[in-house]
Image 1 (cartoon, chains in turn red, cyan):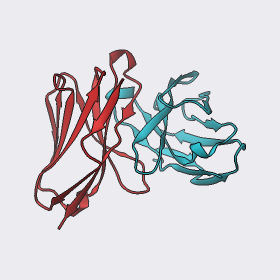
Image 2: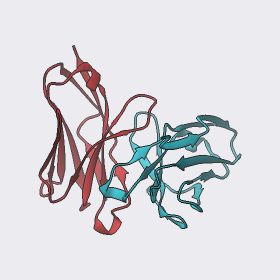
Image 3: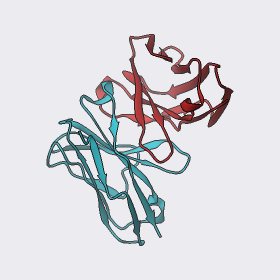
Image 4: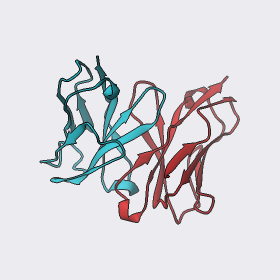
Length: 114
Length: 113
């Protein structure tokens, strides 16, 4: 069956450390993979998009990698801050023939303690 | 710039009632999406549209209907509401589908009792 799995429901780390979140997928060949942040009671907000022919993308303290052999994307937040506490969702477009259909993983709730 | 606007913000329905969740975007995006999010879970795709007059099923379409008569609007219809449809519903739009960001509305919280 087709699945998108994010490594854990919750991740709790110390301020200043690097947070690493994992998104694994099964039986998809995604053309694109995206990461979103969601705060309680709000809609998700787009962070980064990476294409299948890209290995890595960066934006300020954020970095995303995409390994199509391992079928995995990693999302890193360096020098984490309490304000980074939120739920992070990965999303993918299953393939070039269904590139408009975007489906989401279940999310990882990240808590940064001071 | 309003972005994606969803109405209503909250609604309580009795079992068997029907309602339409409204979604409008002012960014001239061709692609629009409806998701539902149950407590503590990720988003499940209900329906999506790649342009006016074109809609397609997502992961969980049963119990819902959509239409897309204009680029701006993408209403979601619930017929014969059931408790299992209690959820938060998010509408989103994007310029070019999977290779561009989704812009989300603030959601509609629906309770069916």
